[in-house]
Image 1 (cartoon, one colour):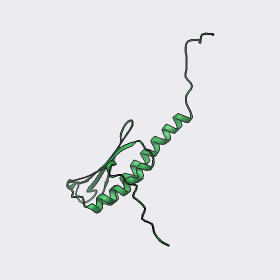
Image 2: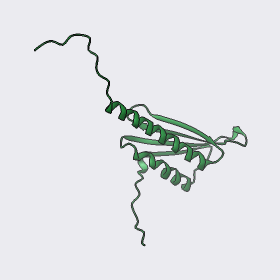
Image 3: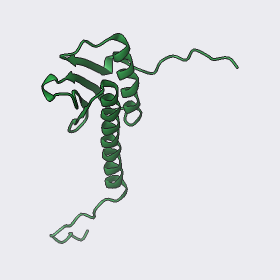
Image 4: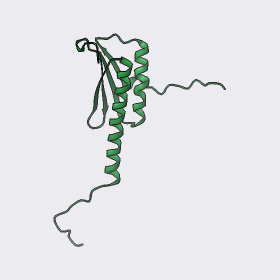
Length: 128
């Protein structure tokens, strides 16, 4: 079997990845973009995904890495934060949390669209 080189579906313009008190390597940036790219499958209206990975030295030995994510989308932005002892684990948990928020938002909108509430009109309608 031969493998074809498929073009990457990751649009780097939609991602902002920053390191706070941490130098991000190219490999860590690439992994963060690959993991966060699964968020784009839910909605075409996502403007930008921003991920901040912070090394918090004040926490002691446990939970030193904080991953914060913000999805800019039409309507209110989706925001999540996760603490963990490993940077890669923090990224995994953050993407899972944001993915759940997007899924919940989509299901909520779908329910509103498929099950509209009847409008209550207090005044009588005029006869034509």
